[in-house]
Length: 193
Image (cartoon, rainbow, N blue to C red; front, top):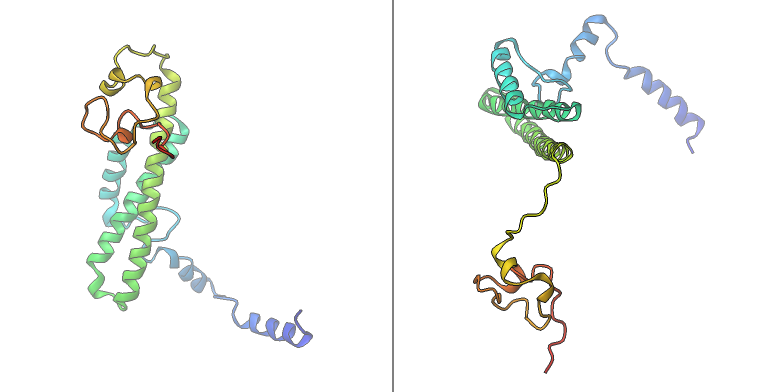
């Protein structure tokens, strides 16, 4: 629990650190997040980069061709992550002219990790959404009579529990039993003597 003196001291300190008060100061600090564009909420595009950004965006939209709103949302995330990775590379090229290259490199590395993670997650989610959409639109096809060669030689219900999982597979594929026909077979706990 804070004492009365601490509360008064906190209020006095708060009055000294309220940020910019003038219109010019507020306008200047409102652009702090977009000085490099690495951590801005929107894609930070300088006027000379507009053509390149438009090309990247249009190419990704054409390649990914999203159909639903969720797919479009993930595609927009992919575009943002790709652009942020481009910004990281551009800032790294100009790193030698930075005031504090070490701090700038740390910031670039952090932004690159975030953008790369976002790109991977958005791509995986887009694939999942597309797979679900295509599964819903395609009629169910009957199972074909052709199966994997290993499954045709050894029926899954005829696998003997006496076969060691590390032994060569009985189908003759050359793989270990555990990686071929025994993929779902339980391991042998006690071998019978």
